[in-house]
Image (cartoon, rainbow, N blue to C red):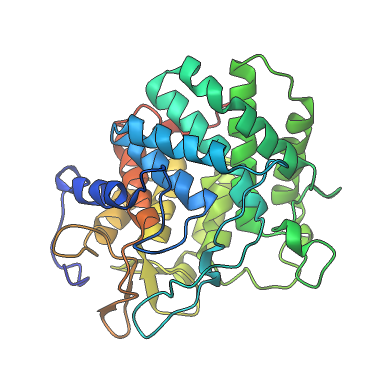
Length: 352
């Protein structure tokens, strides 16, 4: 569709097969799930796509994705990978395919715990999941080792003790969810995790009570993820979460379209909108969540694959990319709303 959002959609009628097929088509024989054709892969978005495969019952492909992570993990428990928006545009419409900066992003390294816990909840295959436990233990140990005394975790290993050293709200909120999932797995496997439990408590306290621990360069406040991720991660009480969403709603949401990526641009993105949908579902606002989801699901190509976003001022699809993680966010949002996988509670309620 053209992004005009004129056609009302029934949630039950929304096609998730085309987004699923997009992920399957791009997954490599080795199990990696890149962003798009000839594009990078990174641990966070790779895991998000694996979770979408799990939701849609493609557990063999999801397992291959998690096996690929295990095969590519460094000896210190970390991974290298493309770092998000660091990739530039090659022209007006498309993202460059040049190699991404090789950074060790702490949030990216922690997130596989969410994917493994999600797979376990969806399949009940605890014996099979056990093969990924050493990978999770090493990655979480790595991230916890970098936690500061104030509870925050620096955004990247490479930035520590440099002018770029900082801790990001969205990244730390995601790490909090990763620690929760890692503790959930540790409990199931009867593994000791006292240090993780302490780290989880410290990061939750920092997110709730220590705003000065984060975004010291004041670069994150324009990003929608910094707004809704503390809610999506479950780091806040229900009352605080609802208040946080209400406080900046008009700043980040364009009525009739969806959630901006950044507050100062007229650009709504499908992934951010779908993550906001999950955050809304987690605080019990099903009606508003479904409305936003239906809006996001109109930003499709003729085959039903989701575009990255819609530029509302120019009324154009922008950029002309269909990332795997965009498809994954939509599938996970649909599952949060309708609960057809059995694992949707991972973002809706605490696992511990």
